[in-house]
Length: 102
Image (cartoon, rainbow, N blue to C red; front, side):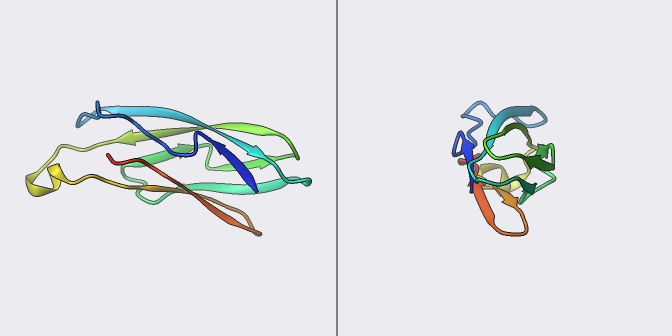
């Protein structure tokens, strides 16, 4: 499968509305063969990833940038924490990386 570091995305407690927060994940192919996979966020309006597709040879790594954009809070939704998921998917497997509470 793929090794992901860090194992969880955490933007900390300093997330503010109308601000873009960034974090980098390193994804390493631990398989003995090449792998092609896509990287998708469960809430693309709030969380984006780049690159969205990767091809890695055995042992190769790629850095994926994760961006969090939080809109202006409104009503009760402002107090709600979000738990988004980033999926790594190929023809042969699917892995998930969870975002910590935001």
